[in-house]
Length: 414
Image (cartoon, helix red, strand yellow):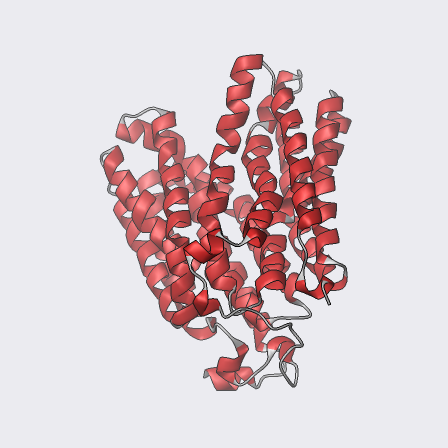
């Protein structure tokens, strides 16, 4: 079916793109970020390296993805997103096929840390969020939240599947299977549904009869890294979001150890973490939808306060019920980070500049993502407890709320 025929169907074509980007982010995040934990031990044994060294492969992949994002954002604003995502699917497949044959750590760095990272940048959140920012106006938050639900739920699905494949067939076969997924599933969807703007199909955002009443914004083609670094709005946005991104590694990964340190069982600790991730997944469509109806800074503030509440409950609780309650609040808060990042970029800079701004901001937010777990584990080694690290995070969120109070959206300045 042609693009034109799809565009004339009763269901607004933008909702097909929501489903497509859900799948794209599910594949991109599930097979790279979440599955790497399953592969860590077998990779350590196969490459004759310790776990810390092998874990650097994931850090390298995340760093390369973030560092090339400004360039990818520029390409998305200038080239057909369909072509870029097709290249990304091919690069991801090539990287996984190469990874299935590695014999040394440096080969893992090239295959996974570089080639898969390039593919991830081209098929992951940046092109997906750009399309959704363009295709929706009144329902933008809801669309982003539903799509990004795929990021969280991918861990729930792909981790046990990867574990089964590793046990039954070995890690090399598992990684080879990951290579076929973007070729057999994602690539056909790219050629059918990857369309950057509704105007390319003669449509308007939300399926409306005319363009949305968005305020006049800067041209996305004029944005450069040097210009962005001089714009205080971007630095305020980094300060707003940074603690949320840092808290994912600082709390989510360390929480299991913290709960068992309190004398609870590994099953109880796993259930606390599982509850956090479950509510983190629910938060994406929930807060995305709220952002369509409420003041967007208020919605972001609610997510920050929810994280602070969760952290305060962790500090105050040594019971299973108290920690489960903390998991609900913290999960809801941190899960809102990704959709609200996209919502606030569009609100501040407009949909034309979205790809460039998100691409430029990726290396600026990367340090928060990378230092979360090392920060928490270092504090634990020094003090013998994770609680001082969690308490420090509350102070960081005070900075986040202050930056949010200083941020003014164009719609509020009329």
